[in-house]
Image (cartoon, rainbow, N blue to C red; front, side, top):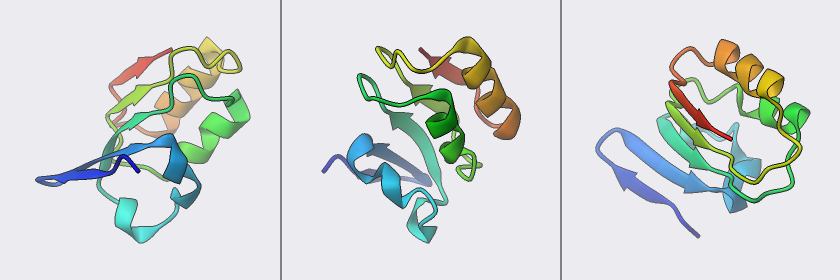
Length: 83
């Protein structure tokens, strides 16, 4: 499973996204969910990740610009969303 911890940052892959509310993910800053079957409503489940700065969601056809903007509003630290 693609989890790697760096100094105060964690990078995680889609396979453990279901643990999004887990305390160990409090410092998550980067998430790659490329090519996954996720919609705007699924994207909103990421809103507890308040330290997230980068989200890669390329080839996720269920995500719209409106959904990405809504997530950006929910997570002020989110500076880069690639869809």
